[in-house]
Image (tube, rainbow, N blue to C red; front, side):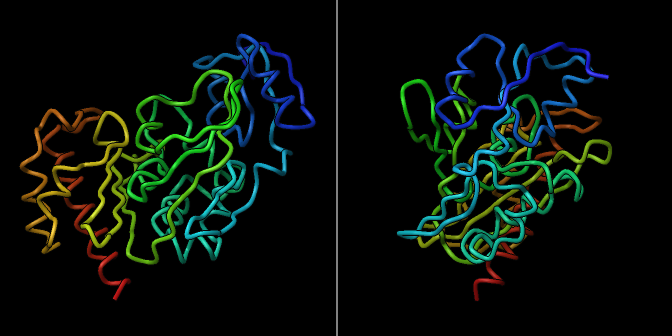
Length: 273
């Protein structure tokens, strides 16, 4: 049973969708894997559902000038298996593969996973490690924002996430996750990408939101990426960075984040050689 009453409309194009989303209480419906459960239990509300699922301009994966353009309606299942993503951004493919179950991955979308608010999801942390850029369309036209900034500010009202732009850097990247057993959302997840300037490291679940851990990156610059070195780098982080909850302490989550990061760095280093 849906506890919220709402109207439904299926626009013929993105411009019409944006006009409809400017109305108070309008929400975009894509995969619906977060929105519809919220409407069912009353934790979310909508006056109007704007169904964008059929807009082909928001689908697909393309490569050009060293960048992958991943349409927002690309499903998690498509993202997990796409050869361009597997070759150029394996941390994103792994994050998509770790999300939920096959039914969720077949319906859930890249844009929806990036834009969901109020809970940790898998793709944002991989997007941060990849130094990706989010493409938005809104009342003022199209714009881009760094994935790191997007993780902090969220989706502007009346806007639609149209694509994720990811530097294609080859296989030196990885993703690791420990899932909450009940929800399958990450209790903690870590994504890494090894670059000539050093590692890029991001964590979610254990932190208030998906975060780049630049202090850890600086301590590990130049290596080694041994488990001992990674755990020492995490122990030097302020404990208040890690948020206790769901029966876990900040100390435990900080250690878990270090363990998952060490595993991801070891995998990224191994598959890149």
